[in-house]
Amino acid sequence: MKTILITIGLLGAAMLLLSVGVIFRKDHSFRSQHIHQNERMKKDNIHCATSLDREAKRAADKKLKIDE
Image 1 (tube, helix red, strand yellow):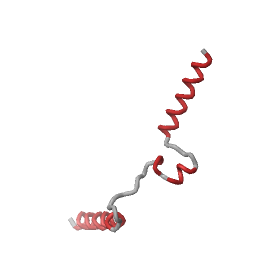
Image 2: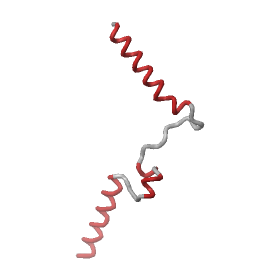
Image 3: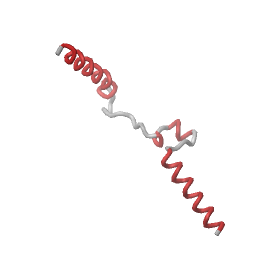
């Protein structure tokens, strides 16, 4: 029982510390974790894997249509 209470206390403290950034932010929200919304990634022209795959498939389809 002692171990469970210590674990619950540690988890509660961790959640409190992780939420400090959200609590003290003006808009009370997390920053987006998506690559397409990151300014540095946009600057370096880096996209998510799904977008890159979609673009590669479109390029391959265009090449097939031109070759036919």
